Length: 147
Ligand code: CA2
Image (cartoon, rainbow, N blue to C red; front, side, top):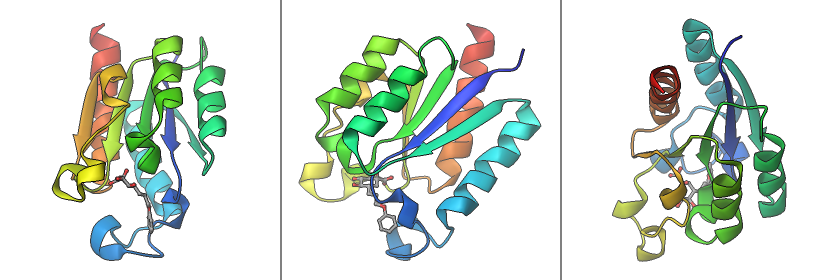
C-alpha cells in the first residue's frame, strides 16, 4: 500500500501566480499542484490536495485525515500566525506534519515571526519558494519510511 500525503494550503494561496510575484513567484496554484504531483509520482506517493480560505474548513480537513493519511504538508498562510485551532487539530490527529512557507516570514513584518503551528510539526521549510513543498515531500517520505 502506498504512502498517503495530504497537502493543505491556507488563505489566498489559490491566488498564486496572480498577485505579488516578487514574493510568491509566478507559478499558479494549479502549477504548484503539478509540481508536487510529479515528485509524488517519482516517489510512488499518493497525494491529495486541499485549499481553503476558512480556518474551520482547514481544521475539518485535518480531522478527516485521521487514520486515513500518513503525513501532512501544510502552509497555513496567515493562520500560521494566529491559529491555535489548527495547532490543536494537528496535535489531536497525531499525523507527522511538515510546515512550509514559500517566503521566509522571519525576514518580513514582525507579526509574521511567530508560528503557532511550528510546535506540532516535525520540521519547517521556509524561504525556498515552491520548491519547499517538493523538499517537504521528500523529507516526509524519508521520515515515514525510516519510522
Ligand atoms: O510565505 C508563505 O508561504 C506564507 O505562508 C504566505 C502567507 C503569509 O501570510 C505568511 O506570512 C507566509 C500569505 C499567502 C498569500 O498568498 C498569496 C499568493 C499570491 C498572491 C497573493 C497572496
